[in-house]
Image (tube, protein in one colour):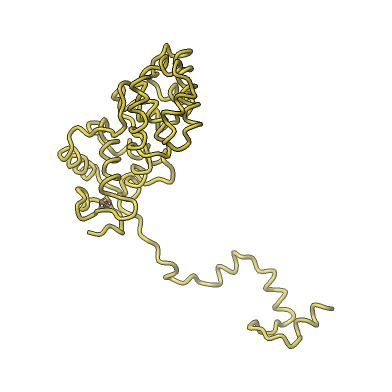
Length: 263
Ligand code: SF4
């Protein structure tokens, strides 16, 4: 009763008065039937077209240009051996390479092996790296991973991704960097720069670093894989910048699929 009184009241409404029977029918109508009856407008939301995947020849051309411009690209994290590389990569999480280098120069001068790091102790490690973000946690990890290297790997950095990933503070990206730089494996470490470049260019679009990593591994010819990680990092760091990509000086601007590129 109360409902009927409200509907027929004087409240202004854009909805026309509902006839008794048709109202019942409208409630019963399934969404499927409704969809059938109402034809979809042809041009609803304009969808940005999916970029055309790169051809093998285009990928080859892009990496040939990277190679020509920088035949022996180097990582920017300073290190003395696989162990110090591992420590530097662990320290670099959410920190810049320059900031890490500033701290590790003095640290590695006194501790370039797991044994020496343990002898130094967590408190002193903390002192050396206190300019790096999350340094307390990172100092704990450096000591813990050094202990584990000695206890389980004879003091050496292991050579498989699965083993490296068991070390405190080391994830897939750390393992990929170490395997690539220390042991020459064809791994692809995806950091924020590589993730951006992989997606923007359309070389290996993906929602996660792992998707981009696997996509890049799939399209990049083996002959480029040793250095591909560095070429892409350096490209993202110095050319394909996050906010203002320098498309006008980009080596691969004719190949890049990004709709917002400025050339
Ligand atoms: S053209 Fe621009 S967006 Fe594309 S890779 Fe080069 S710098 Fe990045």
